[in-house]
Image 1 (cartoon, rainbow, N blue to C red):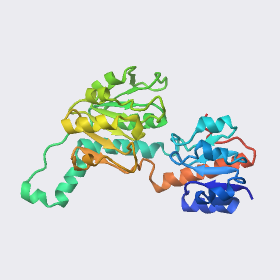
Image 2 (spheres, rainbow, N blue to C red; image 1 turned 135 degrees about the horizontal axis):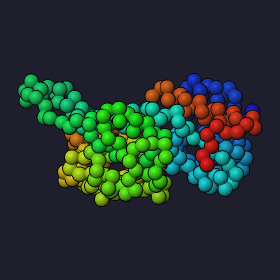
Image 3 (cartoon, rainbow, N blue to C red; image 1 turned 135 degrees about the vertical axis):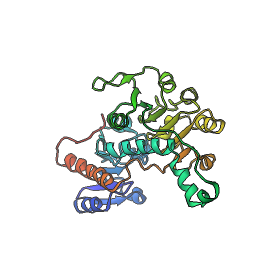
Image 4 (cartoon, rainbow, N blue to C red; image 1 turned 45 degrees about the vertical axis):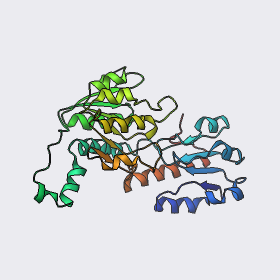
Length: 305
């Protein structure tokens, strides 16, 4: 059997299939099996780091159960002739749903008003303060890949005007392209962030972008924490320079700036963009399908190019 090392678990039903087809070793046994493993199963956060790759002389493929791959040294692996696969497409709808959900939840203060009811404050204090609409507004999207398109379609269905910023205009969408991100933020009521985390996109949502969004604007991040200047974001929320934020991702996950916990204009999620049973199973299956294709000599389904 072919030896595989796992840095993360797959969904139970797919994990069983993996273990039936391959000899699986867990990362805590790395030192004992580094010389024999031919494949690594991981996700976008869990490596393996270059020094671990160097210690696996027979490694042929790294299969990741996520779309993002900022924690995997893809270029280094490629330089060693090791392809890396990820799981695009299968999570588009779930992440887009969450982005719109966070937009609505933050604008309408749904989490804070839920707490208001649960705390028994409604009978004592009366009607909850008014919130903002989430329809008929201007939605800016940072990033116009597959998920950005799915977000845009949902936002447009809510009677919102959609615009976007990306490195280059996208030819198959009719929404307005803004070459300048600050200008897009200035012209948006909501700014939804859905771009990969790369050295080029680090803190691309800068203090200037955040302040351009303004005291009634709402930032939604379903990308990666590193693409937002988190310190500037916290400062803007504290000072009232930004109206609110719906956040699924953070710089030092699972650590979240505690100052955000007490803010009623902020909705926090524990990085659950793709966290549905259906999607996580599909992501796990795609990992297994890529392994099967590689060792059968067939083209990989979703190699990162």
